[in-house]
Image 1 (cartoon, rainbow, N blue to C red):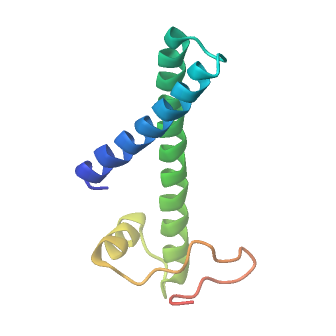
Image 2: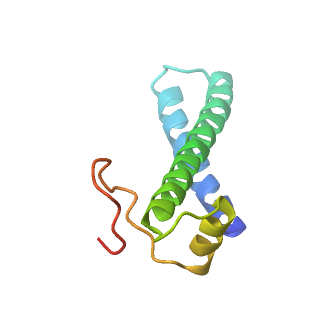
Length: 103
């Protein structure tokens, strides 16, 4: 992912968490010092969750692309095909059906 896009996304997440924390402080649910700790912890948690989802997405894309190739091939060749823009099947393909490119 583009580093500028990563920073923009992180800023949006921090802004949303700070907004929610401000509301909780105003409502008297959290103290101001607690909000700093909770926002930091939530940011780390969301980043970890996002990274995990990205890893699962990339792994599934690689698996389905390998299954859609006409012959057995190496993992490096599958990664190269994805990088070249090889048409990949949708990652939402059903598990009980062979992946089809363009479907």
